Amino acid sequence: MLEISFNHNFAEFRVELEFKAEAGSITSLFGRSGTGKTSVINMIAGLTKPEIGYVKVGSDVLFDSTKGINVPPEQRQLGYIFQDSRLFPHLNVRNNLLYGAKSSAINGQEITFDRVVDVLDIGALLERKPTNLSGGEKQRVAIGRALLSQPRLLMMDEPLASIDVQLRSEILPFIEELRDTFGLTVIYVSHAIEEVIRLADKMVLLTNGSKAAEGDVEEIMSRLDLHPLTGRFDAGAVLSTKVASYDPEYDLAELAFEGGNLRVTGVDLPMGTPLRAHIRARDVSLMLERPVGTSVLNVFEGRIIEVGDEGGPQLDLKIDIGSALLARVTRKSFNDLDLSVGKTVFAMVKAVAFDRRSLGGQIVTKRPDSI
Image 1 (tube, helix red, strand yellow):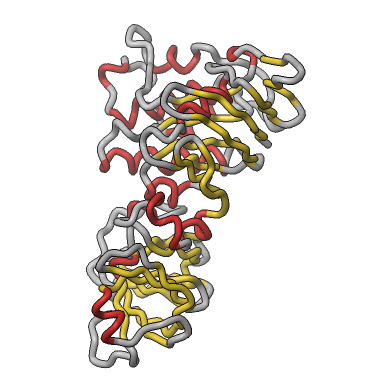
Image 2 (cartoon, rainbow, N blue to C red):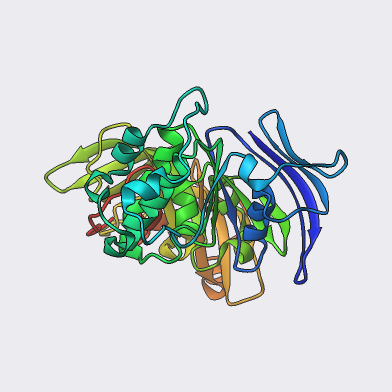
């Protein structure tokens, strides 16, 4: 487990933060650019010395201002992956991986060269130089090099920021493998909400160096008061689902969640596969009566339990359908339909509502034809 609590004054803002990251989990530090995310992990890594506070990993104290403890960065046994891969251009992949490699057991197991090469699928790259690698391949090698240093904690600072959207699909499954295969605790810094929804077990929402909220991804994304920080464009519910059935004739799957089933196309995965479904508020329509004769396959009956009003022409509504679902309507529609807290509505999930960039658990490359 990672435990931190520190205060530090920078020229632009003051970092004042406290949180814990459970062992073997992915915790995301999320926030807009300039909110202090990189500053936080630099203090964890020992690259910046906090003015006040402490940093603990397990039972080891890496920094404590009151006790005068400040373990040097190279002795903290932490892995750090930057936005760019920072591979040595004169070394091939094999020697980049072996640079700084150590032989010691972490979490009761040693992360071996052969295992890293296998998990990251980089066996065919071992004799190449970095100049002959794609962006996604470089980042996989950078991850492998960090793993072979036998870190007890891995920090990733916007590791996909310099990679185009298509190449990101190469990296996401491997980051999940770090937790699932190696049991590593990962601190993942990002301002891309789809990456956080896809990867994180918990998110810490930062603004101006301070913690605005901390909790499960589903909980944070369903809070209407946090939309200015999580982003209004992508604001929406995150549903924890499992693959319940698949119809090969129509390439149609049902994802079961607490409240019903979400029908989607292009998800041919084993039954029981856990997935997160991100449904944006702007992609949900409401009706007062159950619709008939519609092409929309997902209609959920629910009750309005919260209305978010930021003073503009649109309102965000939280609807209890067994799980929280968010819908965005114009103020005119809200008044015309006489909507209010407690009112029963029927939520229609549109064809574009299933955000595959943040589909947690698996990468699916097919695009849905309809939902």
